[in-house]
Image (cartoon, one colour):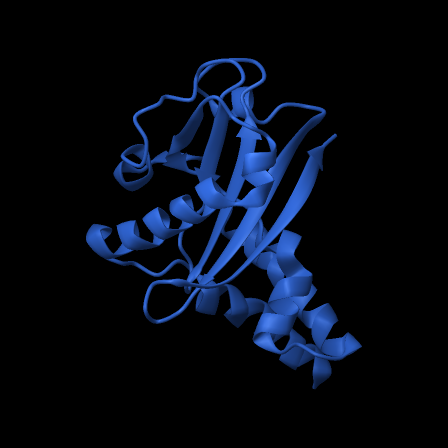
Length: 180
């Protein structure tokens, strides 16, 4: 019985969390709100950037990086439930992985291209059930592709935004991620 329950959870959780389809005007509000928050965040201001740009494509960012915060947000208390959540988040990360794809919403957030060496680039994930992830990294190599922005031995700032019904950030979390 436990095996069946776990199987159902693993199969249904990704479907329940799959990206919600919002009209561009509504989705744009979420991305703008997150962008404004990032610009004012102490983590970003510590870097004293000379150039900030938003990547013109939506990228795949794993929610499992924020498993501890999501566990508390969704009320997964207890070792068994935490384990189920981790399994579900890893399954979700694998099943929703996608190559970056152009987004007019993120492309219009800034005019800077971000291709200049040293420019900080903000990359956004898909909006999924009022959750939005962002990754900020410096373009150490120069160039316009994601591989130019995220390079080996680089560090990024990860953001998780949880939005309320009013399309405002209800909770936010940050992490530093080292790419080794």
